[in-house]
Image (cartoon, rainbow, N blue to C red; front, side):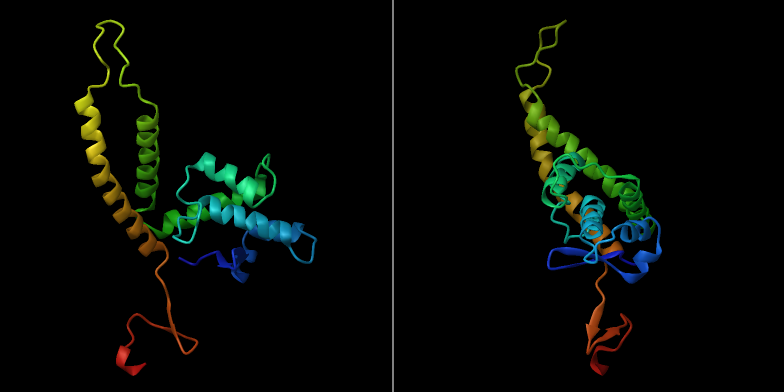
Length: 189
């Protein structure tokens, strides 16, 4: 996958090729400031909102929390709402990630499920009773089994996350300012 952005000193910068694609081109061109600060902030918002790269410090948050933090941290506006170009940029980046990784969609589904389980653990009431029978809705044994299974779920999710990382963002080896093919003979370098 060709990455759309690079991150340098906590600043997201578009690759030259990225600026040829819509809506990234429009985001860049509408910012008339020579420093392109607004465009850079919008690219940062896009990258950190949807990228699954390990380098994304916001990737561990659910979507709502990620937006809230990025609106505050990057856009400096807690009421920030992405416009059609920023939303289009996020959709494009998601599409690139989906087509570049066969496991990406499964990974995103698993991530949503994990957040739902986390919400369940944070909100269930062990004292809740069935109105008709008066019996507990949740048995302590069911809850402890679910907690015990959590470690396996997280291990499997980490393995899936690693697989997506490898599919999307295999690192390119560089030696002597030249890209080294994965088929190169190491002794010839």
